[in-house]
Length: 342
Image (tube, rainbow, N blue to C red; front, side):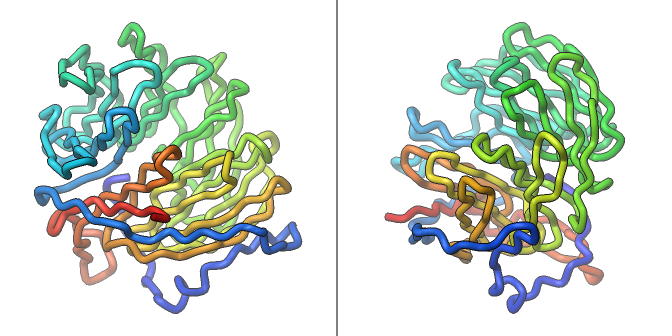
């Protein structure tokens, strides 16, 4: 997520009331607690930013910046520029390889590169305004969401070839998959999910997101088969992946962008531009309970999670708002906020 307009008024009272609201399910308080807190902050040069990824083995972060890909050595806090490109959004690690993919919003392309050396393998033309990117494990394909041309570019990272361009009828945001041949894409301006078949590389069906305004981040739970789509208007939607049935809401912060779920611990995390991180538990029946609402930092809207270290990483900078609540940018006082239970 890069450019948007907010008509929401950020309300401290509303955010402090962050609790789950699964309208179709009786709520049970889980026998689980968390004690996440901001454990440290890593400062870095000012400037724009977007997505973030973590490489546990290398003990390194990758951040999409307005001047390229920034790396962060988690041991020392030292930052370097791995790749120079204008307006980088996604920084997607390609599993079981030393490769990664960046989406470059300014040049309408994606770059596959070696994340250890910075050597460029290929620059690949995408649609207009490439933003988020998702690696679908079963097919081995990468799906790039193009916000301006309202389509999804499908790339085979092994050959650096474009296999398809899929219109989705609106501005695609984050994606996830069920491992059964379906990729789910949040469509921000139509408030729905486009379901893409990995076999035909076409939109097979669409799911409405009732009461959701501008869905962005997305997670998926393989146990319950629920999609967790986060929205700008203080809710995360729980949607049944097979049917599109509305399973309820979780109350979160304002203008959400990040949605991560760990099916092993049953804990999920939603990061919002207002500087809140909602931590929730989802039981195996699909009932959600908010455990914590943590104050992170102004503008900490995207996130990466290292399940081995049990740490979250959130890039942030001071947000400038216009007189009518429009987002004007976030570049000053840049930092990466680290959240853990240690």
